[in-house]
Length: 168
Image (cartoon, rainbow, N blue to C red; front, side):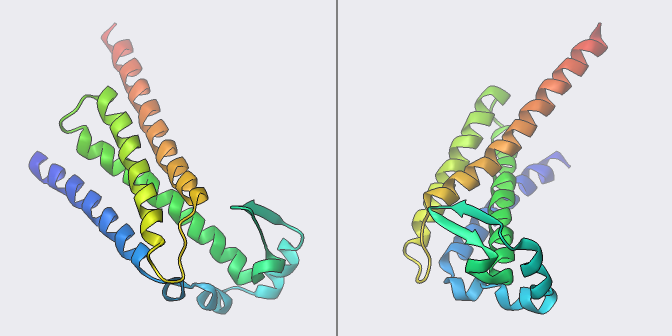
């Protein structure tokens, strides 16, 4: 059973990396969600509720006025996906590294490899038509990775403390 868990850890890591590569290879128009969002969401209501809200991102102002309601929602979906995928990537790297390395070594290597993938992913996008690589997206990806690794660290510390308390 343990062997299958190890294999699943490797397969999850490979699937995430392959998914990132394929996603970065697609031009924006193939990933555009605005039409789907427009069919699902009452744009007029969203425009009224979100009017006046602006988010600075990568030197641009993200707002309903600039992007429309569907574009504004899509922005958050896309950036939320960045955060979540890189949190899962960091978790996956940690699972793979912790099979052979100590906690103190596996955690920083997981952070480094997640950052490396984020940089390479954004660089790869510069070769894709209608896509750009952005430092802000690398920072967003890194924040997802670091958040997950902090959760892993806190869980590790809590588990050690609980174990030490139990042994007394």
